[in-house]
Image (tube, rainbow, N blue to C red; front, top):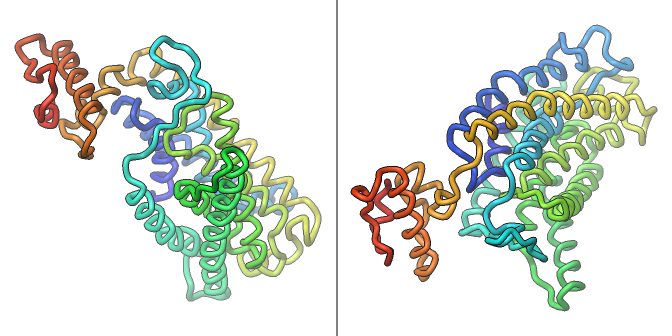
Length: 378
């Protein structure tokens, strides 16, 4: 269950600030109840047609995805990509009030970098259980070696992804503006990019390979962010670059760097390894597997999101976006912005309009000048 919940929360981050609550609940049910189970059965079940544990695996080896770079992250990331394409960008992200294209696009920053740092470290800590725990036990045969190597890869992958992303973003910023700026958000997402990248082969990589895979993951994240911006696809938390792009890279990296010795410890497969050690059978099956995951998610989730959009159940009301979904849906403000009176006044006016629309003038208790009433909910 934690893994399928993870695939759903990837989508939630991408659609933040503009998606209706009913849409969150609806796609979460479909994704976790039908789409994800089909993927996980195909890849991890002994009866799955892509499984390494099948009686007759594809190309004699099956798809190797130790802890879910493809199963969890590509599934969630591809769903997020489809959803944000259909939902559209946040207000004033790529277009102004008149619909004129903004060049460059407006950056919408998070309200607390401190909470982002805390959240990243909590995720990194949990990832040790996520990856090492995929060995399923540590008391039978070589499983203790499998779990310990997965933990080492988790530490090295996250750290190397962070360094690669931070260093590269700093160099690019200095070339663009002439001033070096160390972007904390790039560093934090670089950690996650490195973690996603090593997840598929956490117990199969030598330590040097985990560093290399994590570093390339950090660079993949930056490249994918640039591509999304060029395509004018709005991803509020950069979940698509982290999970989809780096998830695909993570699956591919197993086909390149999986060590035959560790394949033997993990899957009792002595005659297979990554392209660096052996033939390209793992790479071929992993490419086939990630392609099938993308196709499966596309044919199931695209009609679903189109139906939600057609029925008016997907995009939140423009006034609700201005007020904030925390207030309009939950009746309370999630944050207090000190010294942001103009913004708060705009929110108060929007809330007054929203109340008039919902209840009529008799329920409009927010004055045009703002005040604190907008924090008391609807």
